[in-house]
Image 1 (cartoon, rainbow, N blue to C red):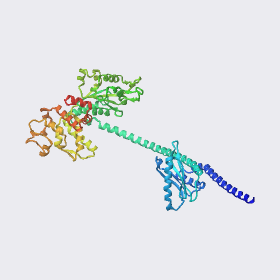
Image 2: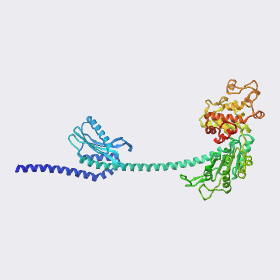
Image 3: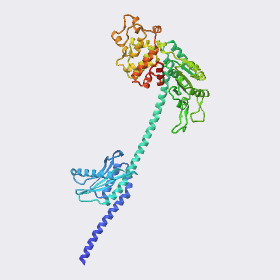
Image 4: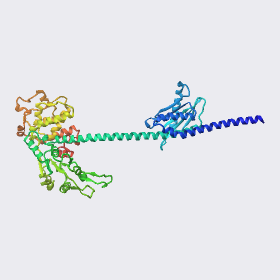
Length: 558
């Protein structure tokens, strides 16, 4: 009886001891849970906080080794680094196999989103994933290893899952705080950059306006010819006026440059200069492009200013005005006369202050007589008139223009010190230039771009220019690059037989077929562009439609 009582007492004592240990363990767990908020917020570093937590966890869940892993740079996928660890369970040399096993269990937990307890020989490994956010993204792991012979229980895993949840939320909030802090600092830095950039832009804007005023001064399009000088005087005279200007002249004579010279020499130089190619705007969108469009006119349409209102206070340059359809001419006339515009889809007229400068290579008087251009619009635009002479009528300006373009493109392409031989200059001066200044400019750009030396010689000049000059001379002599290179000078025995000696006077006395030269020019442009008309038109400095019309006129297959 006494013996039985003693056995019961011993059994109850063991039970009481076991229950006491469990109560103590639960107490430690609860105490850690209550204090975890304070410990987590006590440090601004994730790594430092993780180290503190590992110490506390080991006091509650007896373990030899503990570590926190976190995804690198908040990245997606299985890419983690150890941010804190403490302790070891066996000798360093043997821990490598434990680390490999931990990694395998981490991968398993990453795929399943669950925690695991697994045994490696006489050591237990506990892995609890750190799961964050509504999308349950795994951002890291809490890993524990027992001492040899010790075990982990399901209760340990359950408790550490709660700890992992706390840690996950802390890490996400910390990262968000760091992101917002960095964003605020970046915004502050950006604001400072914007202030500095604004100062720089203001200064650059002043310099740019000054540069544009200098670049497009009347002096830069004149040269030394009488016609050029007269043009300079006239542009200076009309620059400060508000009257409409009609600029006429062949393709490539510099009509837009003249328009800019008027704008940047006058009182409107600080206001917009807006150019519109009338031949390039389809009739269907003419009104919206020129007059603007209101939001909601059609599905997906947003409010947009037209070119007219963009130019308010400044100049609207209407290039190729002769190609504008009659229906659009009537609408343009109305807004010019009323000095107000109603955007497409709108009801309220908008006042504007714009100087109109129009340009065309057509004879608008003939176009008016033929019914292709409104007479009232012609007189409205032709208040002041500038007729730009073709380059062949101002040959004395060609050397100046050649040197000017060489300077521009040599600087742009980083090829300083480029000169031109007298022979090459003579050829460029004698050529007829059906494409006028634009053709000369394009030729110099091509020459400088392809030049391998510091001097431009005859062999650098385009073949179509050589052929065009050859067609000007009589006789059966040939004139090509090879001959010039071999002889170095005359093709025949006398200067009278030397096509390089051709001058403006002799050109006027000979038959000079401009149409054939234009044909050759177009053929060369098309050939070098592999038949692409848009690219060829760009090289020729005209619109694609202009090229099509020119080809039709010259009988070239379009």
